[in-house]
Length: 383
Image 1 (tube, helix red, strand yellow):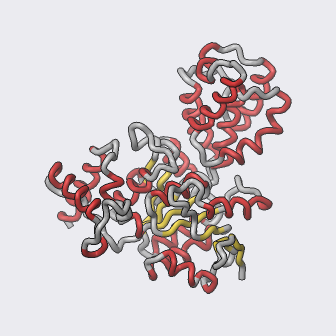
Image 2: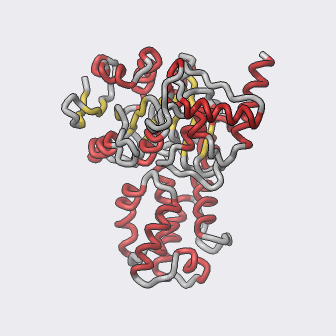
Image 3: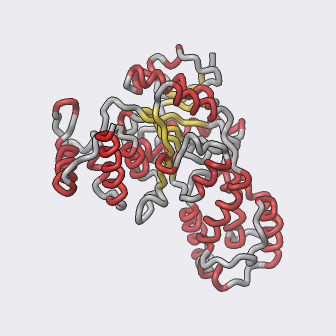
């Protein structure tokens, strides 16, 4: 017991010390370019072997990764917490004064903006907005934010909507930047409104009862995610060491579709990426999992930010893999989180995504699912 405890503590210290994780992709990736790969026993590669040797020479030991261990790595917003919609609405009304949209048109633009930007970091939204502002000869968002003088009619509309999310009028609390304001106020709002997606509590309970490990692998920052986890009543399933953030755990941040946060989560779980399962609701998230060579990628379209009439289209986008370097997308997309356990158990049993998909129509998936058929077309199936 003491040996295992020491080994676990050592592994954690290594990965905390290596905050930039410059070596992490090399350390735990088994799939690299053909120029670097030759087969070792049990499928180990020269690339991985050299990385392990380098870490051993630096620290005297190497973290132990169990090649048989399976861990389910969840995105958070829109897969565990039904938080994508409220978080994106807060983001929309934070950036609204700078979108070059008339006050009366802002409410009507909200839904489309939320849908088009779901899963994206606020930094990316600001970059896109600044491109539009630059084309119009306007100052950047942060320059305008510091200067003040926003359209009063727009600000009246913004402050009216902010009250719906439990936020005070702009200017009540002073922030140095809009980005700081957005991050702080999203935490405040989600601490009040975050709720779990339907079926996730039963799914987590089932995974735990079957001895299947799980953790969170998200772009979203801390403390936003821990606060949301608590608001969802899921702290018992996700203590702090089970929450990994692409923004908060890396310097500089590593946003999806970069693979880093999945590689980090897998390493902390003591699992090889290709033995893990990713659960994702966004194209960038699927891209991140694919770029990390996660063994099985499960898409999910059951949260409130994906309307019923857009589920099929969204599922197709997750399967398309447009944000992955290899073009690999989700193998299967579920509409109901209650169906997650049966798919994961099949993967634990068979060990390969291809084996799961060969038998997927025989699984007890009650909510239906999307996948690629033999012709390479996205197809919906429900018993």
